[in-house]
Every structure is written in C-alpha cells, then in structure tokens.
Length: 325
Length: 283
Ligand SMILES: [Zn+2]
Image (cartoon, rainbow over all chains, first blue to last red; front, side, top):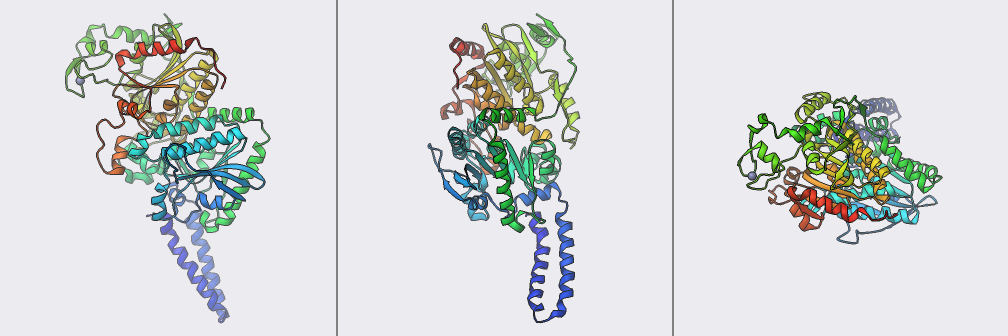
C-alpha cells in the first residue's frame, strides 16, 4: 500500500465533486460560492498533505504509480535512437540507452526504467537492473567518452537485481566497472534521480559532474526495507529506517552529495508532468552548457575532487606510538 | 621503516603462556583447537581446512616481511546522521573498537612482500561486519594516492558486509571515492591486486573488490553482491552450499584464482615479481 496514494484519495474525490459542480454551475450560477468553498478546502488539504512530507511519505511519493518514469522524459527529447544490448548475453529492458538530441546538443542518454503497472513491472523486473544491463551502461559510457558526447542519466531503481542469475553473471563486477567508467569518462555527465535511487545499483548511473534530484525523489544507501532487514532483521520497520537514513533531496544537498533540487508541483511530479519534465530537461541543458566549457582533463579532475571530499571524519591523536623496528 | 606497537605485540603474542591455554572450536567440523596451534597454522583448521576470519593485524603480520608503516590510523569516524536506534552510532563504534582492538574497519600501510614494496589495505570483519563507512573509504583512498606517488603496487584484502547503514549515503559515496582513486592509480600503469576474503559482499564487492587487475579469492570465502539471505528470501528457496563461494566464482569465470591461506604470501610474491620490472603503461 502506498501511503501517498491513500492520502490522495480524499483530494481526488474533492476534485471530482468540484468538476461536477462546475458543469452544473453553467445552468445554476448560485453554485459558485459552494465551488469556491470546496476549492479552499481542497487547497488546505493539499497543503496539509504535501506541504511537509516525512521521509517515509517521500519514499512512497518516489514510488507513486503515476509518477513520470524515465520513458516520459525520453519521449520529450527531440530525437532518440535506442542502442541495445551488452554485446554478450542479452538486452536488459530495465535500463534504456541511446543517442539523442537534447535541444541542439547530441547526448548519450542512459535511463533506468520502472514499470507503471504489474504487467510492465514484470517485463522491466521492477526496475532492477541485471549485470547485462550494467554492462550495456558501461558500454555506452565508454562509447560516449570516446566520441566526446555528454552523458545524461535518469536514475530510478529500488536497487540492482539480487537474483541467482545476476550472481552467476557477476553483478558486483558489472556495477564496479560502471563506477570505474564514470570516474574516467572525458565528457560531462549529468545525473538526475527522478524516482527512487536505490543503493549501488543507482550509483552505477550517478557518479556525475552535476547530480540533481526531483524534490520528492529519494536516494539511499539501501532501500528502507533492506536497511531495516540488515539492522533489525525486520523489513517491516522500513518507515523507521527511512526516518534515520537521510534519503531526501534536502538532506543530500546539505551533505554535498547532490548539486541541485528540481522543485515539484504541490502534490508531486505527476500532478503536472509536462511542466516538470520541461523544467528538468532545461536544467540538464543548463548544466551541460556550463560543463561543456571545461576541458576533458578539468572535468575528470573536478569530478575526482568532488568525490574525494565526500564523507564525515575526524582526526584523532594517535593512540599507538610508532616504534622504529 | 617503522613497526607499529600492535604489530610487535601481535608477533610475540602467540608465544606467551597465558594465550597457550586458550582453546576454540572449529565452526565447520567441531574440532577443538588450541589457539596457539591455530594461530601457528594461520587460523586454518588443521582437520577440515576451514579458514577462520582473520584479524587485520594477524593478516598484515602473515603477509608483510617485517616492518609495516601504517597510515590513516588517525582518521576516525564522525556521526553525520546523528544516528540512534537501540544505541547511538558513537556507542556502536566504541563497542566495535573494544571488540576488535581496531580504530576502524581497515588497516592500511606500506611494507614489503618478499622484498617487493607494496601498499597494503586489510579490511576486518570484526569491526561492524567490515562495513564501509567514510573512514574505510578515506583510508583506502589515502593509501591509493600515496601508492600512486610512490609508484608501488597496491593490494587490498577485502572483508565486508557492504556499506555502513549508520552513515547513510555518505557510506555509499565511498564506493565512488575509492573507485576514483583506483582508476587514477591504475591509469598510471600501477598494478592493483585484490584478495577477496570471507565474506565480501555489497558495496565493497560492487566497487574496488572487482576492479583489481588480478582478483584472488581466498579458499572457501563467501563472495557476492547480494547477501545469501536476501536472495533466498527473494526466490523463496534454499541455495546450494557452494553458491557464492570463491570456488564457484572461479568456475563461473569471475576471479583469477582461488588461493589457500597457507599459499597466499608466496602467490602474492610471485605475482609481484612477474609485474615488477615492467615499465608503466600509459592508458
Ligand atoms: Zn575444522
């Protein structure tokens, strides 16, 4: 059960009532005061529900079935030619990649794909990428780097696929090699977390010069369910885990892990998807325009410094004194 | 070259009489073993060859010729998330320190192996399950940067349950930090070798563990991305015993070799020897 979908129900009912009254108002002008009152109530509830969301509510928002998925963003590019497969085993549909035009600019788009319903989700493995998918990602990053084409990624996954086949085909190695390629790519990389950024499976698309998150997206070291299972042996304590993990866009901007937050309409990205997608693509273009001014060497150097800094540690006086031997 | 006090103590430890009286049980075959004998046998059960999880200090002592110049020991964790569940994160860290006699989950430094200068990092499962937080990432990145300056090979012994939850995304980002340091180090033509010991999973497995030029699995070590329990819950069936073992990974083509602990040092020495006199290759 998605807590956001539950909370939306009341609003959707009100919305329907207002629409019905509006069409009736054409013949009964006296209804207009009632409509205004309902609209005020609607706005009040909307503010109450979405004005300040808890981390767990944001997790649910990031998984909202109507939330725009990567394919919605890709559909708004000028052109897109999909490039399939890892050249070894198969084409993983949970991650899409290809050459595209974003405005005037050629880009390599790499995007994790979550399904909207059960049928789509079964096909897309619930957005969990397998080693073949990550090998496709690495192939496209390397290709873009060699040809001098900037990389644009859309992140949306609960995490990398944890199945038997994925272990047999070296999931760890596949992710590790994506990370490696991202650190050496000689082109600008812009990553946007549009839904759920789950663990290393998300990071494999997200070591970037400019990392953005949609306001109500989440990005986490482990899914709240996974974290609760690891720490307390109980996946049902996911809400509690979410409250600890600091997985919201605001938290992560504070830690310097992301660079920019893309505001969402009140009620979430799906309330006005076309406007939100246009804003997102515009922000990606702006970031690319800025990064394109840097040389390949400077890009790689700046990226190195950025990740080299991240963390929280202190320096302690040494307890054991070194003795020359 | 300096020898840290702990290494000196460790080397003499098993000759003292108080330790000689202690015994332990092999978790695999149940054989009762004297700790002294077990230590003399590199913490490998003489009966069934079970490889006990090794303390990082013992591992360094086993691998390095004599002196070890430790670096990064002064870098210790903060509490960025102000995490508290049943205990606060600082309390958990204090308990881990007490239990493991380590300041964090990895020991890094420089020494020689059969005369070859190396940078060595050894992770320890005793410190919060070998989880990678900021300090593990920071110390390994420091080691790689220094090794790059000195142009010496780097060997990392991994042992990890994955990223450390209590540092949240800052822990996940250490995968990026270490990878960046690895790619710089390797890009200069330096030799990077990883030895995957029991257990190596999650964020460590999915980053530097599988970025080695040569990847060794210690005999019978459990190595994988997802934990065994997670996979069993997902597929709702029991996995075969050998699933995710070093031997299984060798058969699947994921690692270069499986090495028994008793042959580890001589194997590393040979690999360092093969690669030693080659001129750096520009990438
Ligand atoms: Zn035994």
